Length: 193
Ligand SMILES: C[S@@+](CC[C@H](N)C(=O)[O-])C[C@H]1O[C@@H](n2cnc3c(N)ncnc32)[C@H](O)[C@@H]1O
Image 1 (cartoon, rainbow, N blue to C red):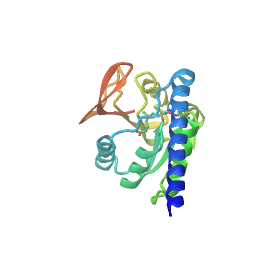
Image 2 (cartoon, rainbow, N blue to C red; image 1 turned 45 degrees about the vertical axis):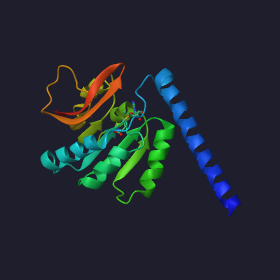
Image 3 (cartoon, protein in one colour; image 1 turned 60 degrees about the horizontal axis):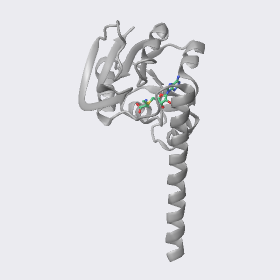
């Protein structure tokens, strides 16, 4: 019995160690090689607000694209609580791998992760998406205006597009994220293209 407990603790310790090691590598890769925001999951309140927007204003939406999906938590939440199928795009191999693993065990099989650069994916697809979700950063989010012909509605978490008027701004009143030393409150900016 003692040996069983000891081995279980050792295995758990190893898994935690491997997880934090891979996460640290991914953070360094994001920051210094890709120069893109690392994976920070969205808040539950933001996810609930996204679902509320879809179920209130875009009930007929069928296909949703998540641009930069991390572990896929937002994608699976939206797939579960709306009548949509979600394609989750993530370019970091570790995050995309975990997301695929979690997709496999998710009960609603309506969310699918693809490991790819989201912008290359959009460049090469002929599909048109009813809704795109993005929680990217102040530099990457405005680039999505180049894909107005492939996205009907953009729901951007926290980051607005300067010079483009959103149809709605939802303040989730749940704090903020700090990016490049600037505070961005947890809001949704909704654009109809
Ligand atoms: C702030 S996280 C958001 C995660 C998730 N959307 C959520 O709400 O929980 C941003 C994610 O976008 C990914 N990302 C950034 N640029 C990307 C790109 N060009 N293609 C695909 N994923 C990208 C990052 O690796 C990171 O996992």
